[in-house]
Length: 167
Ligand code: TYD
Image 1 (cartoon, rainbow, N blue to C red):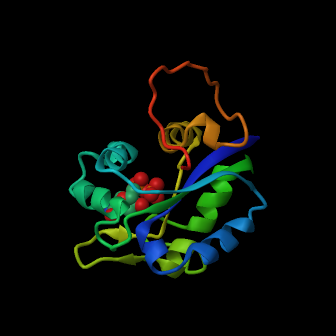
Image 2: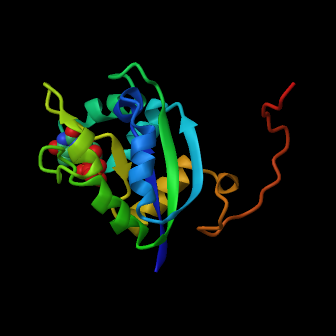
């Protein structure tokens, strides 16, 4: 069944210039990229993304990590991969959450590390199941930023909506 997965190349992946390597690994899946962008991550977005871990002792650090506060790279690359078994294919390539337990040939096994304070810097995020993927994709992307219709959408007319155009 075709499904979508949110992938984030996290600030450590960007700082280590791993974008190309990670995209090359992910291309082995033969999935389609249907959305991609660079995002400067506000705290509210990082907190919402990791809300299922709100009660964990490392919550504040992973929020800071996703914001780029630990890497002097205040951005992440967000992508949506789409196709047959997208989540399993991407998670298999990403490897286990803990980089030391991840298969050494996986993305996290190759490029991840555990910091001295114990946070897993694992280079990528991959959605864990279809409902989390839907929640995360809706959090990171608007319908207009995806080239396929993944989820039902509605049209609204916004008056006095301020946005930037090229001058
Ligand atoms: P989680 O959502 O459990 O894993 P995954 O990213 O594989 O879906 O955890 C989110 C992030 O939190 C994870 O990528 C790295 C970090 N983390 C730690 O630093 N320590 C931990 O013990 C866990 C479980 C996660």
